[in-house]
Amino acid sequence: MDSDFIIFIGFGLILVILFLLVVLKDMEAGKKFARYEKVLEGIIQENHLLKKQLNNIEIAGSANIDAEAIESRLEQRLNEQINSKIIPIVNTLKGIETSIDSFQEEQQNRIYTLEERTKTIGKITSNSEETDEKRIIDMYKDGKNIETIAKDLRLGIGKVEFVLKFNKLI
Image: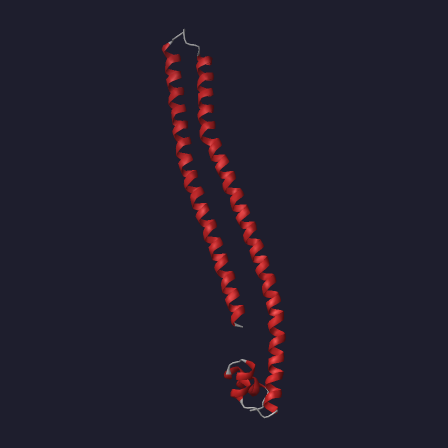
């Protein structure tokens, strides 16, 4: 019963650690998203100001300036800046996602192997407990006292007494 309890505690600790790691990764990703949102907001404000300036230039009646050429250059610059800022973010997020997926898969495999081990341990211990009970009863019927039985079988005196009381021999 003690080994089962320890195994369950182990599973619980693994799950808690796994949950904490996922929460930490989520917090890091949230911080990065907040920074990127600020950068995008700044770029959008710059774009807005540049559009205002373009409108002011057009209103001033400057016929020498080609508005379409300026607009295309501005668009190109904005696209370059957005791509230089967003593509690394996307790549970082993909890397985080793959690392989380691999970590999760590794933990699932560990949990599966631990479950298999506990199943085999459960099968082994249940048979040995039954044979211990039979041996305790047989030895008691042969006239040995509780201390001798406990010593010979390498069991606790309390367990021997429990088995004998359970079987109504004492």
